[in-house]
Image 1 (tube, rainbow, N blue to C red):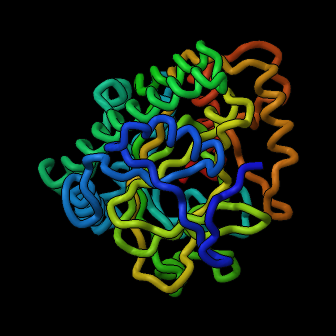
Image 2: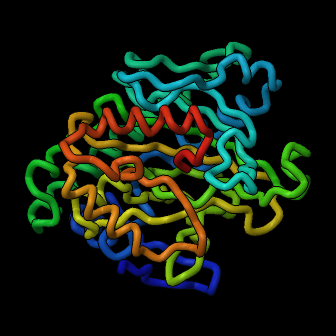
Length: 354
């Protein structure tokens, strides 16, 4: 079982750091994913929450979410398509509240394309009440995150293949991602003290994002300067991730765990408001493997067996990549399965990704 290296206090952890300016960053990334499932990434060239493209994208997101509800509703997310499994558009507060009816997620968000090809597959839906130049960082940021994710995936695939963690075929599918499936999701988390501005049912348990793993290869998170609410489950309880200014958070995903047979695990995590705040903003890039990546019945069965015995909070039900494949008896492509997963999310409203 993977373990986080340093528990700062009973409720907080410090993730290891991967520095892209170091010559051994590839090896370091594989090693910390193997032991920690997550890491902080520095010297990535995107600035921080108060300067550079990162800051500009956060500012644009605040302007977007400050628009009247009717303006945001005009670009509401619809169902995904076969070509673009991840939806485009806005979803309101509480629209994605997990698999428990007793929970209410105090967040709103917008799903956007993350690269030229994904834009062609499904164009962005952005409010017309703001001029394009004000919203442009929300299209530039994911394009840069895509390039960063490709660099990370290529390096991780190279080292993982050398160390026989991945077979050559799966290493190639991992390194060749970013072919249009990738997604960029922008979140605005509301304070919970006033029941999410009065929108939450009086009896609901409030949180920002339900317990989950991510379905892809890698997830890159850029958050604002507030004390982040991301928590990772380890040693039988959740621990809040200590934030570091200018550092991106990188999580391994379910696909990476699947093809590495558990060597590179996907962390169970959630987002909560640990202390009273004025809210939180985050920019999240989901990197997926090549759409034609095969999901093999034998690999899926082993992944389901690992997940069934993995530690988790008592009674927790959450939606992993391999859920829905219990009777799989032939190879299915990652893209086809992802489309089915997202169709289920939009149809029933269970938990989506962070």
